[in-house]
Length: 66
Image 1 (cartoon, rainbow, N blue to C red):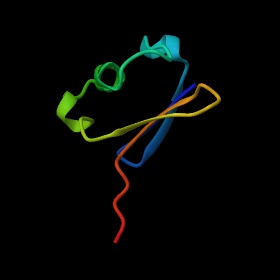
Image 2: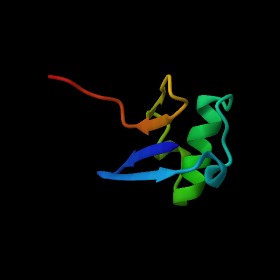
Image 3: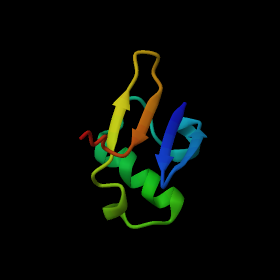
Image 4: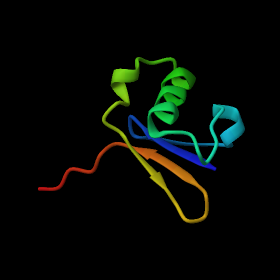
């Protein structure tokens, strides 16, 4: 599962829908997310790609504390 948090909304996709695999690079995953949402890559460039032990991928904004 690929979980994407973008502009306050959460979306879940199968890796096949986005065209990614566990071995896809962070840059490729971000590019595929941008393409899926029809936005510029610059809007997700600073996002974090978390790879969970379960195989799930989470794409989210960088957390800012303080």
